[in-house]
Structures are given as structure tokens and as C-alpha cells.
Length: 302
Image 1: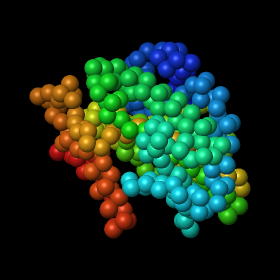
Image 2 (image 1 turned 30 degrees about the horizontal axis):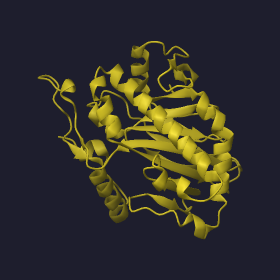
Image 3 (image 1 turned 120 degrees about the vertical axis):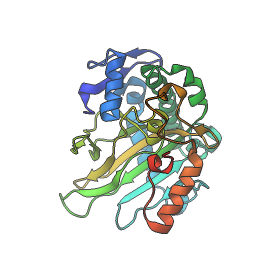
Image 4 (image 1 turned 180 degrees about the horizontal axis):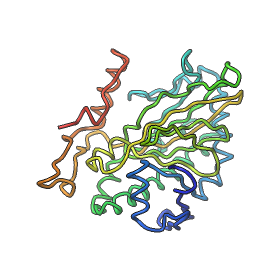
């Protein structure tokens, strides 16, 4: 289960990983990925900017609507999205958020430096986690290649106050993330839920830790050797919930394919080569036309 029993503590340097809560062995780290598709982790540098990050997010979403609408993107689901009748959720998604010229830092406002700093820390940490994942499966030789082929997208989300009193309100439908890895941070208002293999939704309590979740792209690349968990957001109460995520996703044009190490006479590749940007366009067009979509594992299945 994703809880303090499966947490890792990361100290100042990204490569200085101090085992915590029983994840001393590589096998235990791999087991967390195979069984739960993620884990809870501590990183003191992120904890130091926690208060400032959520303060910056309040400032961001308090901007006039016309100002927020200036955040635009040519990519599916990018830019600013206002709340809807179904989902009381505002969001800003910035593609290539690790690049200052394309990040929220380009905005001349006081919150920009804080969020840019958070993105830099999160992207660096995700590189370390990717290295750990590949080492745990014995394919560390691909580390530099995959890190080079990774784009980092930031998404800041504000979940409004539910109008239903103390009744649970759906903030985000159940879904899997389509990317390599997600790093997610939430404020003191709980809401993130993860679906276990036993079919139980568990609520992830907010604290100084952050959540790492594996995505479908990584699951496909590893020929389904790890679990890709469904997650959703269910809010309750009359307070605003904020969350911020950095998605490590395959860069457009990079051919994602199962390595030869996971293919032999008994176990063939379950998936054909795919381009993440092409899938994202396909996914978005299906949502727009039909309101449904094809999961990545189905899209590239052999």
C-alpha cells in the first residue's frame, strides 16, 4: 500500500538516497512498483518550499480570469482550464516546464520563481527515480537515453469548495496516468485516492511527503512488469484543495518500445512501438468526438 510503510527519504543530493521505512533493498523498491505502482517519499528540499509553493498557487488562481486565460498551449490539455459544472476544478498545465522560456517563470509575477524552483527540484528528483527504476529491473544502461527522451509537464490544480456540505464530491475521474512517472504534491486537504489490486480505494493523507506514481508509458516500456495504478480525487468539506504535479513523459518523436531484455522465446513483446505525442493527439480527438478514449496499452498492443 502507498503509505509510510513504503516511503523513501531523499536528502539534499539527488543521488544521495537514504533508505527509510524498510526500503533498504532494491528488491523492496521494485516490489513497491510491481504491487502498488508507486510509493510515498520524503525529500527535504521539496519540504522546504512546500508552504511557498501552495502560497504561490493561491496567488496564481486568484488572478483575473482574463489573465489566467493567457496561459495557452498547442498541445492537448495544455494551458488554462476553468471549472465546469461537473468538476469544480481549475488547472494550469505548462509543457516543458523545466525550460525557463516556456515555463510559468516567463510570467512577470511573484509566484513564478517559486513554482519554477519547485519544477526544477521535482524534475531532478524524477530523473533519480527513473534511474532507480531501471536499476531495479537490471536495465540501467538505458538511463541516459530515457532521461534525454523525457519532457517535463507541470500541472497546478485548484479544487473548489463543494456545495454539498459534507458529502464527497468527485474532483477527478478514475484514470491512469499515460506518462513515465508522476510526482504529486497536495496541500493539507486530502482527496487523492489510489485503487489497489484488491479493488479497494485508499485515501492518501497529505503530509510533508509527496507521491510517486508509475504511468502507462513506463508500464508498456517494461512489458507490464510493474503495476500502473488508477487514481482519482474525491474532495469533502468546505475548504479549497490544491495539488501540483510534475509529469515526466516521453518526448514527441522518441520511439517507445519494449527493450530486448524483456523479450525472449517464452515472453514476446506485448506492445508495438509508439510515439507518445501521436497517442496524445489520438486520445484528445477521441475525447472530443466520442467522450471516451483508448487506453495506451490497448492502443499499442500487438
